[in-house]
Length: 348
Image (tube, rainbow, N blue to C red; front, side, top):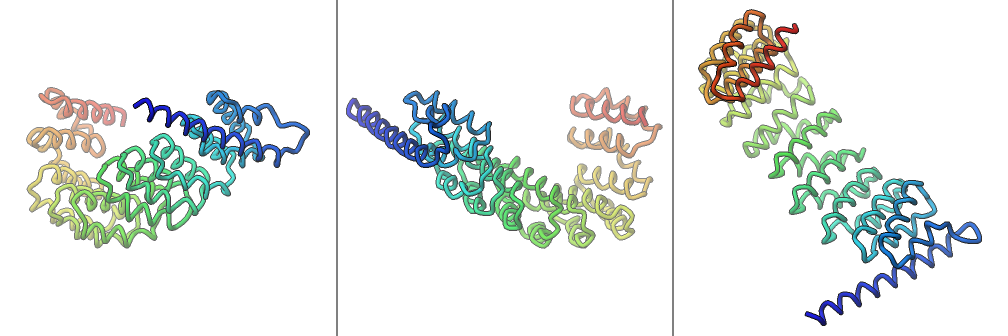
């Protein structure tokens, strides 16, 4: 054990020495004045905290002439110094460092990988896409989410393609939800064929996400696919398809007819609530009666809560008494939604 520890210390010392020599060479070659600035000198300090502080100052100053010195510090033996160097390079914003950063996309330290993700997104270079794509398969949920988020910052068609094909299928719901937001925010209509295909062929959760994304994109070309999805075997797909259909085409008589036909045969109470809600939004006000019934007879409690929420959106003042009665529900979720719905109706 003693030999191993001594060996590690010796290796770290040699690594630190090499980094220091390299930085000294860079500073001497790039200095524009008779002597380097204090922050540059401190990059060679034996104390890692001093080096880290110097890196932070150079990043905050967006010191473009410090780029080469900071690149050398990517291999510093101290974790904090390395992370600070990556962050500083991102602040400076010179995309020529992307090839240097991508080398650390599989670094054993999570903090380094995380900072690489963020830097690649900030630098907005297509050269970082391949590395971020690989990081979408990282075993750590946080890394995958950060990689997905920063792919969304890169303004290039391939970044969006990678997000759709990879993150939409991620096992972590938070990652999938973020991809949905990115696609919707960018109004990426070129992604519609891929998403429509996923709505038909993929797993329950991916189909659900796909139905939701199509609604966010808001393209009427998706209406036929979403109408077909009202027959999907997974209840969440049917619910989200109903919401997306009305979000896209609230005045389309074919949409209203499809929703009305589905509610007549629908057995799942949550889907019935969402169908009724969207039928009212589509102008079929008689379907408020379904929501009023589900407010008390729907089960489990999330169905009653959904009915309360829907009445807050599409209910009438006459529904206030019903919602006040729902405040006596045994389940807190229902009472919470009923209270929010009451506030909305009273303010209307």
